[in-house]
Image 1 (cartoon, rainbow, N blue to C red):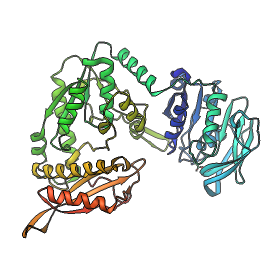
Image 2 (cartoon, helix red, strand yellow):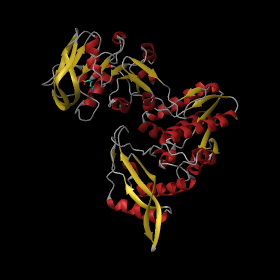
Image 3 (cartoon, rainbow, N blue to C red):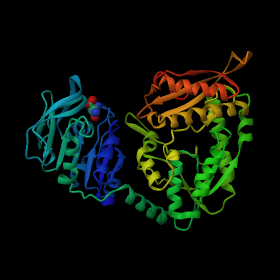
Image 4 (cartoon, rainbow, N blue to C red):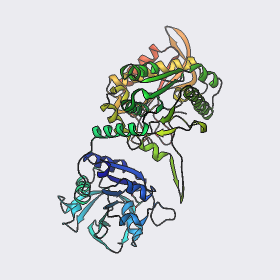
Length: 512
Ligand code: GLN
């Protein structure tokens, strides 16, 4: 399967995910790797074609991401998209400069070489999507123009290197025939075969896990979130009881979380799960602490301690499994200027030096929606697979200020009602992340003719694609009214409810 793949070198474009998805949807395995992946590592994968993605940098500036020129001389066809085109031009001796004005949006592509394999089945004039500040001012030697718009060289080709470049983003749907162009590259130029599906990805991964692990034991921190749950289920499918999961109930989880996790993964899937009730430990460490960063640190540190203590009780564990997914891989690399530091990403919050586990990360190549697909194929129920993200410190950062059990109980009830109503109204999957926040603010209310003096809570619901920017969800008023009635009537301790209408930036999705 992997010997019939496309490798996408990631230069940081917001559309990379789409390139990989388009190719995988064609039935061909596509893997996204950071642009600085060493050439020999890329070649080890034996790709049939390489796509260079777009990216925010400018090739002519110092420290701009670059690659070895050797890449073009491996007999593997290359397709450079946007930054990928500019980089290819720059490396091969052409010129790229800042354009007079930025071009963003639809443009008309006019094909100059109608016989080009890249443009088979595509009309001579079509709409393509542009997003760039720079453009090619002089093509590199050996390259010919195969397409243009009224403002730029839109496509080039080098026969000897079998390299194509396009200035526009073929991967977005606004490029009318973009998918066809990518198909042309994948099948006509790179000669891939259709042999990839989620089903055989799962099979292959299971086989790999078995080979890697052998008869050794694997430990995994199960949080109940999508990534760790899918990783656990996949590994369990591969090696059964050689996997032990540790689930830490911090006392800062959603309502009935431990029970749900044990039901789904313990009882239904028969996984070996050690559920540790650490509520008191966490809450006593958090007592009287109100600074958000201090709370996060305490929770993180305590989590690692509990996890380590449990791990130490097990013998012969050789692997630590994590639900790291591709966006985590990227996030944990800080790429700044000419130098870059690569930190490894730890879902469990950091490994102690002396544990010497080997890492097992079966979801490293997948995007979130693909992880969900794998989860569904493995039979994980929808309500677990489609869950919104939940922060590591949990309710500890949704209870503003000091945290205690009473507040956590109040918040759990309110949050549960909000989520239940979202699901009932078929809105849960239409928003990206929804939850309730409890403020350290009391106000006066009246109930049954009696004065009350209780907490204020906030409903937060955000819509986002990448969690970098977000808007508040435009939930219907009658829905908000229903939630408000229920929370104010059913949850003792809250007598005032507000709706957060802040976007990110300048606010964040979580409050602390
Ligand atoms: N940063 C480059 C430019 O502005 C490439 C942009 C891109 O790849 N989308 O032209």
